[in-house]
Length: 175
Image (tube, rainbow, N blue to C red):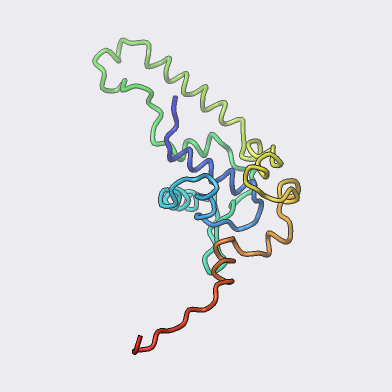
């Protein structure tokens, strides 16, 4: 069984946010972290927000963060939300489906797959925070105890760059 790219991106977003604690993260930051399309992530994050997995904060220093503790986000539930269907083959349109045993076997396999996912939460996936912090280049204090005060108080990197940029000079009509 193969999950869709949509589910893959959803899980990447949740892992990234879970690793960063309560700090607000931008979609652009997550896209850079995984080297994936920001436009695709915007759709995924919008859906995760509407479903209550992600909280979106608007405004200049806004961003996204987990809406609930990582331990309450069940992986099976998330995958059921992000996947459109679990048909491994097209049994409903097959002429031998009524007499074929494959349909039952595949339904049982999908059920077992989802049962395994139901045993895990996002907290289980991010339990190796130190290793994730190293990959995401986070300070180790962020990985071990949630969020360090310095990170939580500072705006995202792209916002710091905007704040540090000198104001643009208005052009005069002669220019």
